[in-house]
Length: 116
Image (cartoon, rainbow, N blue to C red; front, side):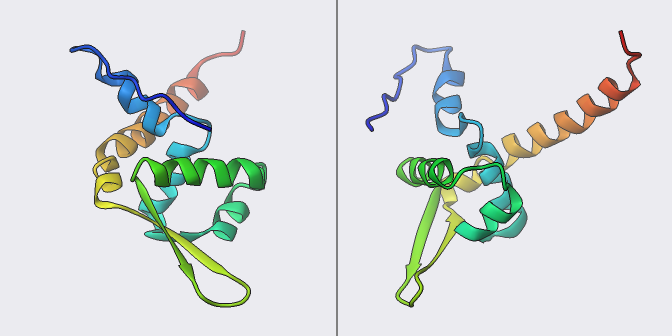
């Protein structure tokens, strides 16, 4: 599958940034790599049981194609693979941190609201 990368006009950097981290799971996978430094495919599956194997593989592949993560395959049987953030991927830390902070603030506000 070929993905189109937008060449945004000046003043439109959000679209390009969102292309890298959009998708239901990409930002979450990046967040986990900030928490754990290295994760194996099975680690992600255990953390997110509702994430299908196919979707996980696709999201990891796209993150690797965008040079945000690296994949290391060990020559053992059964195969062992782990994922790490690249230096480029680590530049997303302030953004991912702010997203997590915003969620914590939003949850406080949402739980303080009366129903109806």
